[in-house]
Length: 228
Image 1 (cartoon, rainbow, N blue to C red):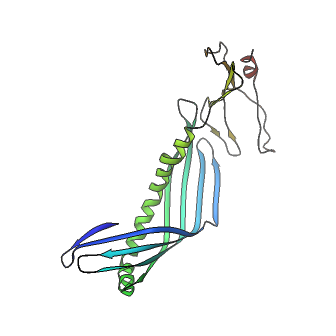
Image 2: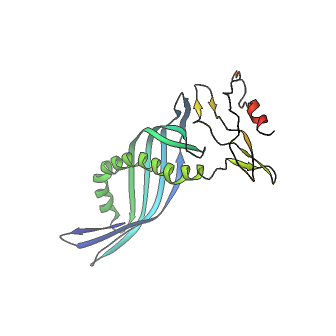
Image 3: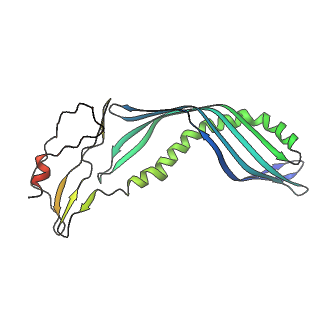
């Protein structure tokens, strides 16, 4: 919504509301592990269709109707970098984001829609470029306002009974290799009444993985020693 000042009509107020996504299709999507970074997410040949209502009014007239937008051949590529914060919770950030929209078609219905559709044709290239620039910004916003705040709520400790708890926070950022993702968790039992540092050092945990199974879990002596 907004207000446009013109010489002929003085003040022109426009509004688009009740926008709904009618159809989304992302047929070609891939997620690939990137060593020492995180994930590469790529989408192509995407399609989005939305509907909504539009209204334009000034001091001398008012008109309204419906609007339909079709966005074709959407391509997006971005990298997700994994990390950890000082509480041992995971973090995610976007690097090297790029997006492209090949086609954008907007049509309106209502009074004098033939005129508005003619005007829209002139603005469609500019709108397409605007959406191209907006996609990566929206992804960044989703990460900062939705995903990372959610990750901050993930528990990293668990109460076993009224005396003992276990700390399974991350000790280092997730390690990404070509065929695997490794999470190094603290794995430390502690006293709920007097939580002090354990006088033990946790050695690196190495175990052979043949990538033949989806999940492997390893425990070191440190894990069991802290329970003593």
